[in-house]
Image (cartoon, rainbow, N blue to C red; front, side, top):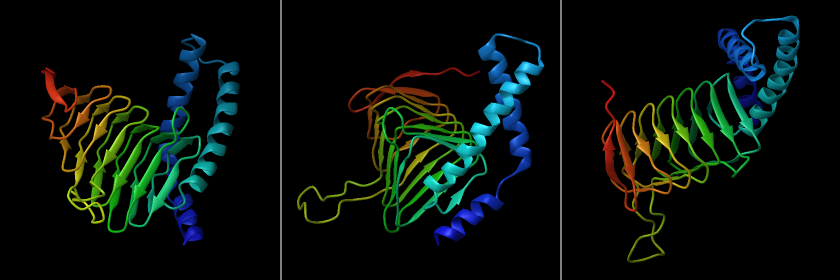
Length: 222
């Protein structure tokens, strides 16, 4: 199973994605160096950067080998903890960091985690007993907790608690130490403030804060 997953991850590599990544890295180097023109020195720095990225791609596929599906341009910084007794699928151009805090992805039996494209996950704990779905272009701060289950019944702690799907739509930002609980949908373009506990669904283009989280502002994107 492990060998098959690794082989699949390597075959899925897309050179079009690599070309886009090259352009991004070149632009990042030029910005870091404060230059607006390409030079031999800039290209030399790009070569060293690419060697590092290539090594990271290999390490990432080892770290995430228990995932069922992995996009071609997924990068890790630090080693995440993966528990997969259900299904974990990660899209393309996703960064999973475990530097400030270790990222933990736990798909329990019958549960699934689906992470879309162009996402930044930084020290996040995701637990899925049912389903946790994350869209595209989302960012998560350290020590964020996303749990679709109560784990234990309120009245009888020996029994399993209720579960209900969580859906986080596109272009959502979640601040550090936020908690997102079962049955919640966070609408597209919304922002969850630092430390907020989200117990109810959030309308699109909203800023929520507090315990429990409430809408404090609506974002005008017209």
